[in-house]
Length: 485
Image (cartoon, rainbow, N blue to C red; front, side, top):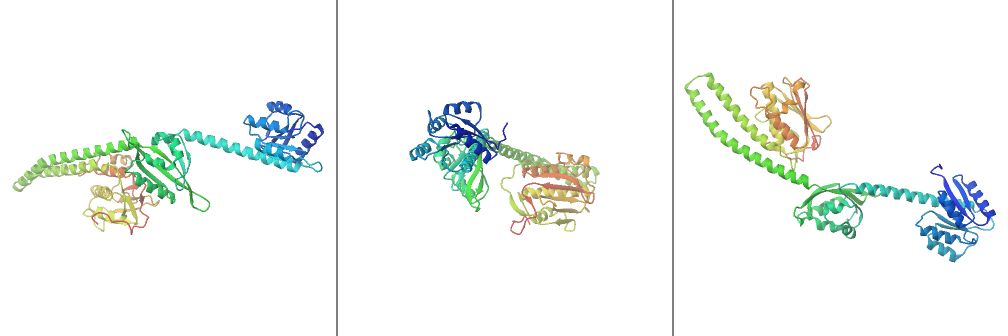
């Protein structure tokens, strides 16, 4: 099998001496060229039926069918093989007709001199160009097949969104508009966007045109019985000068996720309302019981009353934790930047003295400050429950800069219990409800973060929280402070 760089040439001429001379000269000119010869158009067609040919070089003036006749028959079969008309005499009419018929090149064979260097260059250039075109076409077909295998609408627009360079057929299923319409009028996809979302989508398009990577969710097919939600991501592509030249991206139907999220929000709200109602109904008899125990304790000194008082206090803590647990699993919609040290100090108020708390590092974190503060409070209470009033707590920035930690110098948590501590009802303290760390886990998960328990530097417990938006190394001066600080 010939190497991919070899070039097979078919030379057609009814003059045997000239045919043999040109073939020898071409092969001598460049060792990549391998020349087969034919004495007529009919012989050339028979030879091509048996062998692959990269380029045809043909004389024009031949008995029977001419070189121009051969060119026309090749092109009539939609054959793009390079075709060089190589003839002894120049004829403007023949040259014009050859160009109209799709000739690759036209070379005049002078009576004196060696034309093989020029002819070899013409042949090699034509073949290289054709091979490159075929590779590009093959790659384009492969990319189109990949693009058509996805349910996402893939597209490429000009920087001003007025020209559509590419779109796949999935566009119609996502936007409910025929592909032909958006090809004819690229900005017509905005007609499919819910009128209340059009301004927001156009602003996002403007940001992408200015070089910003954009992700946006919006409604489409508003006239349909059940409107759809679409997520689009835009990636600006710049030219050599750094200006935005094209905007590529994809759009996908996220209706199922949006409706699931809405259902989840509704269920969380129902759960919170139910928990509030139950808590209210429980607190009334609890207050009565607690008040009567206090009255009796004023009249009698019975250790069983002290036990009952502690049990009632634990019930009150349990109700508070259940209320918190009912609301802390809801997803965080719009986190805001909060000063890290301020958030920590605010959460420790009333729990830890200044001497018992050390804050290492500063910066901002993007979070729900109220709920993140509750998580920190529960971690501080956990340290106090297990380490006592003399416990020291250190909180700071992780070395990788992707989160923060809360560490105490208490007794620590054995490796075998480190995963179980986040389970509801798990506690090793006689004062605990078993829900404090479960609430921490709920809040962390709602932010899209992760929490891990490891051993502290002094043998105590160390809780490490990592995730997107946790970058306390950033400058905190411009961020808001935590509530209550």
